[in-house]
Image 1 (spheres, rainbow, N blue to C red):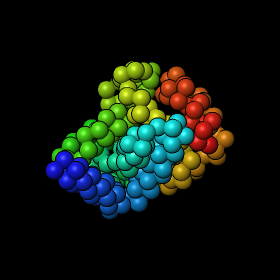
Image 2 (cartoon, helix red, strand yellow):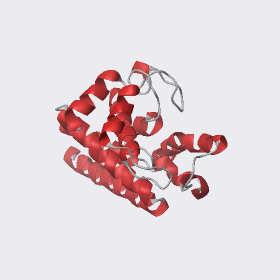
Image 3 (cartoon, rainbow, N blue to C red):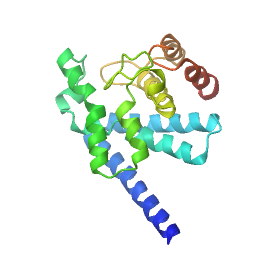
Length: 193
C-alpha cells in the first residue's frame, strides 16, 4: 500500500511539473525556455556536487517551477522590450509571492515552495520578497539563484543582448558575498562552466 501511495504521489508530481511547463509556454516562450535552462544548470550543479538523486531531481524541478508567478504578470510588463519603470519593476518583483500562492493552490510538491518564494533573496539581505540574510536562505535555493542569474545573463532577450560566458562569470564573481554565496559561486564556476 505504501508503494502505491509513493507511485501515485510521483505521478501527481510529474503531472504538476508538466502542467507548469505548459502554463509557462502558453504565457511566454522566453520564460519557459529560461526555466528549462535554469533546471538544466541546477541539475548539473547538483550532479557536480555529488548530491543525492532526490536532491538533484528536486533542483531540476525547482528550476522549472521557480518563475511560475510570472504567469500572473501582465503581458505589457512581462513582454516589454525595454527597461522596466520602477512601478513595473515593483509589479515584477511580486512574481515570487504570486508563484508561491499559485503552486500551493496547485498542490505542487511542498519542497519546491521555498525555491519559488526565495529565489530572488540575496545573502546581503537586499533581495526580495523578504530581505533574508545569508543562512536564512536555504542552501539549495542559493544554488538555484546562481543558476537563474547565470542563465538570465547569458540568455538572449528582446530587451538585452546575451553576455559572454566570461562576462557572466565576472558578474557572478562581483556578486559574491552580496547577491550570491561566495563558496557556491566558486563551485558553480569551477564545476559547471
